[in-house]
Amino acid sequence: AGSTGENVAARAVQGGLSAVIVESGLVGGDCSHWACIPSKALLRPPEALRAAQQVDGARQAVAGKVDAKAVQARRDTWADHDDQGQAEWLASVPVDLVRGHARVSGTRQVSVTGTDGQSTTLTARHAVAVCTGSEPAVPDVDGFDQVQPWTSREATTASEIPRRLVVLGGGVAASEMASAYSDLGSNVTIIERGPRLLGRFEPFAGDGLADSFTDRGIDVRTTTSVTAAERDEHGTVTVHLDAGGTVTGDQLLVAAGRAPRTRDLGLDTVGLTDGDWLDVDDTCLVTAVDGDWLYAAGDVNHRALLTHMGKYQARACGDVIAQRARGNVETPPYSRYTATADHTAVPQVVFTDPQVAMVGRTEEQARATGRPVHVVEHDLGSVAGAALHADGYSGHAKLVLDPDRRVVIGACFLGPEIGELLHTATVAIIGEVTIDRLWHAVPSFPTMSEVWLRLLEEYGL
Image (cartoon, rainbow, N blue to C red):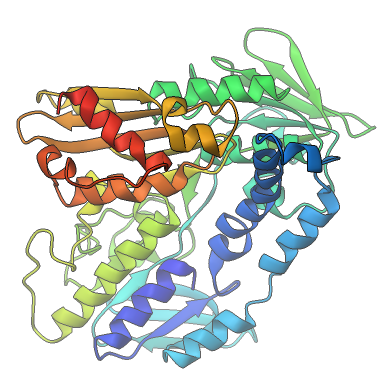
């Protein structure tokens, strides 16, 4: 009953079927209670304060630092770990909710051990959908069992701010929590084994974020791995590095990837491997199970580990289940019954300060296809809307284009509060809007969106 499961069930009901969700935890899942919502609640107040401090005339009215306790209290109003409202929403759809642990026990069958210890078996007329998501993966490093590091769950819900925080990982969750805890008062060290932060984004994004972090006092260590860790009797954590030397802190946060939540789900009863990701086609049908009845949507299928993409897959999945129940099995490419955007236009915003936003392919990914590629870039700070937004605005924009089809296939932006620019790029990519047509999409002046005009001029239009 995370956001993905909620949407699969709701779309199936809209399509004329009945649906039941089995949930062993909280309705709303990780996004509502431990991930997207609480993390953004932690990140927004420091971002708002910094925005005021970057504009002359406003900065004079701003004194002091972020009130960490007030930030945490506001977070708790958003993520209070009470799912009554979400359970009531399910009932209104209507979707039945069963509290307990579910295991697949055969074709279209699910056995449930309820919270009262009683067992029952549910039989689906049409389909079963696995929407159990993913969980933080903690690498097998000597001493981690003894140290008991935080994962993203503890980081987004902690009631205390550690004086010194060591963050292992340089991806989205690691970068966001490093940004948040630095603003909340921690001395932060971030350790990434790759050459830069945000390794799956354009290089300028990770490099620019690292520069900003360094300016804010965050110690950024790239091309560095952790070999061991221990916690002494005073609670101090010592992290040992592969190049020698150590880093100490009061808490260690491990944000180094995700693992599928597929253990103890009975998937071995239908020929799948316990604990593995589930391979699916574009309708989210599990390809390794005969009979066209088992689906997997969201993180668990490893296509795009993002809440909004899980909900997107869920809408396609629930719709196609309802269609197939009626005997409509045709699912043409780019219909609403297929999750084709997973391949071409996955948008993502990193809510650090500065923000990073990307959709589609990076330049490296595009060139790896062997097709022609054209790249245009522009300094966001030179756009009037950005310069008015913040004094000394620093940011960058990059488009990756297919010169044969004259369409955008990738976009990446770096800068304060640029996340809202991303949907324009997403529409351009998924709609395959040619750059000749984009020329007529006139950006309002003075907004940061004027960067689109400058990028097209860089292309030669």
